[in-house]
Length: 207
Image (cartoon, one colour):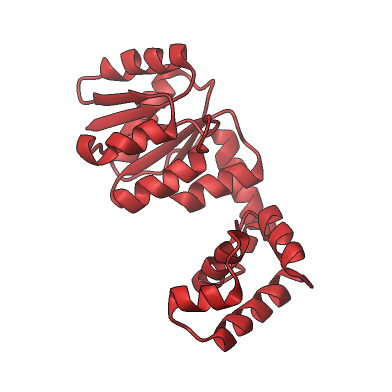
C-alpha cells in the first residue's frame, strides 16, 4: 500500500517514515510538514492511505481531510493526534477520517491500525472508541445529524459571508427557498439570529 504522512514535527515525521517504511507491505510515498504541501502533490502521488496530524500549521488537519477526500474519494485517512475532545474527534470523522489514533500509541499499534484501515476497518484508540460510544449512548452525537445536507451547505455559505441572494444564485434555488431553509436551521439550532445559529452549530460540531 502507498502511504503519505502529514506531520509538522520534523523529528516525528522522519521517525514515522522510518517506522512505516520498514514494513514490507507499506511504501511511504511522501512526507509533508503541512496540509498545503500534501495537497499539492496528492493527485500525483495517488496514495492509498494518508496519516494526518490534526494540529498542523496553516490549514488545519480536519480541513486537509475534507479536501483530500474531495480530490480522492477512495483514499483512506487515519487521524494521528493528541486531541481527544468531542468536537475534534467528530469533526475529523465527519470530514472523512476512517480511523483515529492518539499519539503515544505504541509503534505496533500504529502499524496494526494502518493495516486494519487498509483492509476495511476503522481503527480507534480505546479511549476514542469509548468516547464515541458514550456520545451515541447519550444522544449527543445526534447533533451531527440535526441539519440536512442542504441546510449544512447553506449554513456554511452564510458563515463564509454570502448573502441569501448569493446563496440562492449559487445553488440555483429561489430566495424564498433559502429563507425557508434558514428558518428551519434557526428552529433546529434554537437560534434567533445568524450569529446564534453559527455559534450553536460550532458548539455542536456541525461546522
